[in-house]
Image 1 (tube, rainbow, N blue to C red):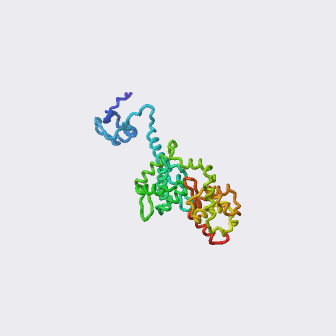
Image 2 (cartoon, one colour; image 1 turned 90 degrees about the horizontal axis):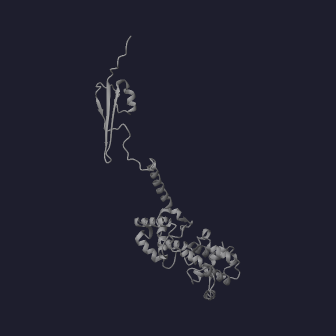
Length: 347
């Protein structure tokens, strides 16, 4: 009977030593295996063990540059997940994207079809009327440059835009000059935002997103007093009587050809502002009172007349409003009424 003899297969030794700085991490691994098991061990060791037969059974292989186990990582703090880092990166990326979308000019202005931008949010978070006007000018030029992809054509455009958006008064031009000297690039009368202006715009937009910040409420105070200001005072009645004595080209115009409230409003404002040249802007009640006293055949009701003036959605291309709730005609409206005077019948 043959008795199996103990195997005399030579052993291969494998050792790994590793050190880590800062935390003084250290690792040491020692393994022994036969030549016949080298293939299996090699697959486990991830290729650290050579696939050729080792002739020297006592050979010690030391590899420090490629650790067998995963590289050392700083221990996670209590409650911290290994997914925290990519989640934070995702949050940061989402925040950046959100800011880009929030600061899009289309969120603050929209085109009116006539080249003027209409403000969606009239509170620019300015602490006083001057700051509100200057912030409007700055945001307007910024938005216009991006939405129209060109400079604002001239100062008159900005004056008209301020009137259309209800922030214009006799001080607007002075405040505009101040802001333009610091934040605009002026070339051949046009306006573009400069780098300092873009920084200032970003600051304003951040404040506009803050619901806790409230700017000077000139628009609210105007609306609050609008019903009171619509009443005709004794002095205004006297003023109307003086206007009725002045000649107008509309004296020979058949107003019965006008069939809508907006057309009557166009006539009244043109007559007072352009023909008589008595005021630069007029309140709706005063304009209606003058219209009905001068032209006895007017058929429009006061409510329809007022709605036509205040309907910024449909008629902002014709009428502008000051912060004092006074109305005036746009250049397009003036041209339209002049056509009425030159052509008969009314178009």
